[in-house]
Length: 303
Image (cartoon, rainbow, N blue to C red; front, side, top):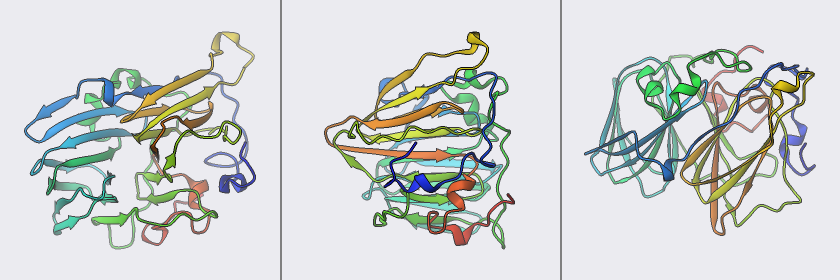
């Protein structure tokens, strides 16, 4: 349910079509409150927190200058967000070394790669659970030891002609009322760096909606948010769930599973910055002309 001024009001229904799926069981939300928990790793490179969903692993790093983060035999493409303009990194892959500025989204090819911090700062790396070392280290790894009832197994999207290479894109893109946020995608992830909101969100203009068959990860970078979730009633009352109103400061993630009806309200008095993450990419967003800012670099999957 979107306000008519919201560009999402023109979207079709679920990820793979508009037919509503009947769900017989539900999987609850997950939180990783990085601001309120000890890091999973603390060493000379910095501090690292890890949380996950069914199809993604979020690695949040407060990194020191000259900190290095290496992947050896990385099985698939991963994404990285550099949220602050003053942060700079150097990334080395088999193709060479490239400096990447702050306020960027980066896609790193599989295989061997190293991220070296040219300044101290925050980076957020996004992996699929094929990176088993990171998936197993997540603070909520035990919650995903079994099969998720409503999320299909992960399938990567097609590679670009010529194969996967290091790519990065600036987040310094003007808002456009015809487009929802600033969306970039690769073979494994879709990242929507939403427009920052100063002050709390108006209570008379929210956007409750649901997804039939894919998770949403809401990454709070600054400010505070309440994630509101409501669950459908089924014929089996044993499966009914109470509404959730999950207040989260930053940094944190909230994993919103299907088919919960959900919306999020900014709560902080200053800048509230949220990033929505999907793995694999969303077809409905990808099908909207002009929404995905790097659409020419990555082909669509078959519908």
